[in-house]
Length: 69
Image (cartoon, rainbow, N blue to C red; front, top):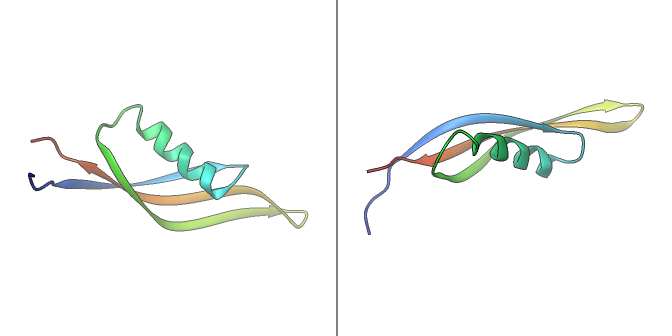
């Protein structure tokens, strides 16, 4: 097994549905232009409240991309 090297990038996804959906949104969009997405780590979670209800989620994640050999 070869040792791997990763590059980390930071993304912020948003959703009106849930924090999980915001994460999936960020990864889904990034996967259209980036390759070898391998892992993610949640850095920050924010939300917007209107009329005592959560109306929007924003989640910032670090994503590890495996560097090709």
